[in-house]
Image 1 (cartoon, rainbow, N blue to C red):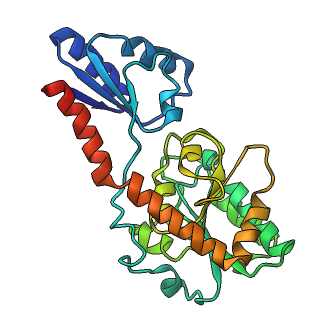
Image 2 (cartoon, helix red, strand yellow):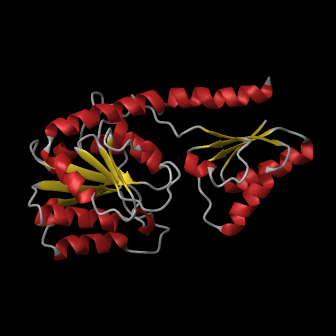
Image 3 (spheres, rainbow, N blue to C red):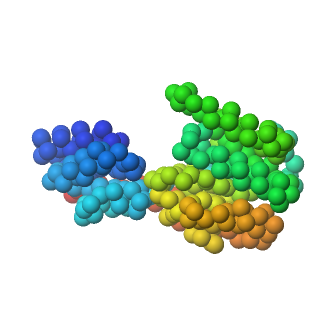
Length: 285
């Protein structure tokens, strides 16, 4: 069996499988935005040698015109590694944040499509319009190969709002779970079709209520009103729901429990690995 991850690997794997009559499995982890690449993966997927197409989300699956070979198996994480009871929390300790200050956080590569400007605007509105004494934390940085200075822009937005004490930019961190564990609420501000962001299920495994938009795989992760809140792209209600969570401790605890429960029951790496192995074994038997 040829097992393919990555766009180029799919094409090469399909050609090799066709040439040598070997069964091929594609593991599709992205949503093609390029028309040509989208056309090509649909074209190649019709090869007889392509027996299974594992998609990380329904949104990822939907890029295929024919669904016959596709199956949805979400990304997985080690939920023990992302357990609040086992992770050594570093954020409050390292940055001297008091235990009674609420932390609203987000994580990711600081690039335009992640929409971190929206996260900053939410924080500015929460602190100025609603007068909430919270700390908004962004964990991550811009990779060296991106020729842009978005981080500087984000910091300037905070400075111009005179709210530098309400925001924390940690930069890149190795042990992200140790910093996320101190969050009270997690926001994923992406408005592009992210296939199935691991950071969302990592935050859920840590028991964080999550707020995000109904795009890509994010819509499949958040159960609106249960483990967090999800919004249409044109919806402006995120700030109101955030304020509700800030003010209602019982609601936060309820959503925290539901977030952890879903992560453990549906996204644990052992469950996901078993599903993938089952697909491989079905072809090798």
